Length: 95
Image (spheres, helix red, strand yellow):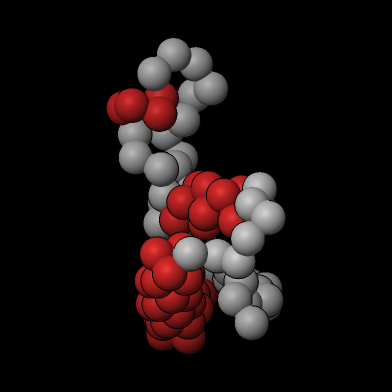
């Protein structure tokens, strides 16, 4: 739920009820930059840097989840003879 707002229903006042998450904010910023004939403003560049730091933080949290939490959880599943959860690899969002 850090990247996408999972509570959206597509009806009514969702945008008012639930805040836009990181993916929506990045899309909004990119649309604003793409629709201009000029270079990004200082503020847009600063917001981009802020988003890059947020993404790096989230990637670190995901790394911890996959690297530490998931193996511990899979061990508990193994103890109960339940198949493991296998994590795939994800490409970074920001180069």
